[in-house]
Length: 139
Image (tube, rainbow, N blue to C red; front, side, top):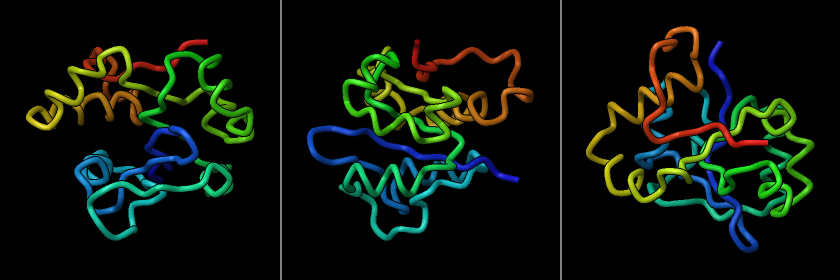
């Protein structure tokens, strides 16, 4: 069974998530996961309401690209996130610690990003791999 994944950030009044034909969505397909918005059309970003994202992702196992380095920062964005399974289980990952490197290098190093995603979603198969871009958000 493929893990379910939410990708995106909450900024201002909207949650921005990659559309189903985007580079990010393709990486998630390559990582063999079920991206919640993977069937949407287009290659840009979706601008979703916070309520729709929380409702769509109540049981989603992972959240990547959260715009927070700590749980405290995430809670400042919205307490509503806490009802999501990924948040309750602390399966939330960010690239904030390497943000500039991620956006500058990831497009030319999809293999490295894919290894990070493998470590997130299939840690038993990537035991010896260290994260390059991603990190689990801290308490």
